[in-house]
Figure 1 (cartoon, one colour):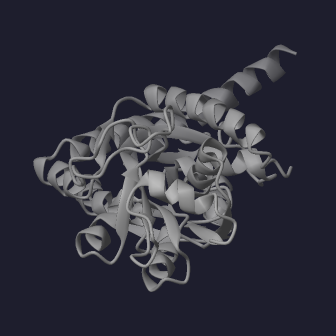
Figure 2: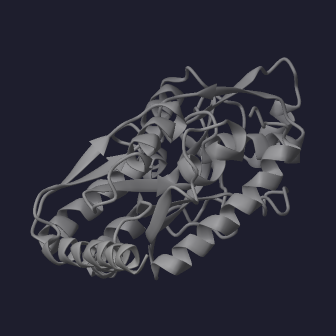
Length: 322
């Protein structure tokens, strides 16, 4: 028995030493950053913004791998099932981590299968309409939406995404009728709203601001509690009459659960430095996003709170399909 105990202890000690050694030599090859949405969407924009500086800091290339589908489920599952060795990271958002698992049965657990690294951004959504829509304010839009002959459709970046929930919450709060049209990402959704195939979109401000300024879309309101400096003339949904309405998209980095703490700490430190760079902050601010930061523990606590918040909304809207 003593010999067996010594052997077990040696094995544990060897595993611990190997883990430290792995963290010491990491990274020794390119790192894959999975963005579970189509190129051009908000998650991909942030992933590519961070990837260049992070690769330079770590001395290895950061390859952004877009794995779209299922409202972010496909790419998120790939990340969850990847080796926990620091060579696969996930660009997480409220959509694929906090919301979608509440609606459908997904092949991953957002809390058990991932280790939090850092929050990267906080981003408003914008309630946008095609210029042909006869509404120039939230009030006029609500009146239009209560008219059953209007037959309004709203686009989202996919079933169970934050833009989907923003539309469903708006329907519940305002008592309007709109049909949901899901896409495989925000980039595809905005294209069809611009083309007039769908009249309405709750669109990430990173994707929408340029189209609004060029008048290809009309912004009625932002979904956050405060107005955005990028669109100062656009009111919030709450100040437009729907008191208490607030929806915020966020992004952040996760790694497969079990990734060595030393690697998590290194990634957190390097990405936090990147988010504080003036050029990065200016780039994000120009698109309406606020840079994140903070410890892995802070981000993990934030994710748990967001899941609890949206759980109540999903149940109230009757969206659970599990």
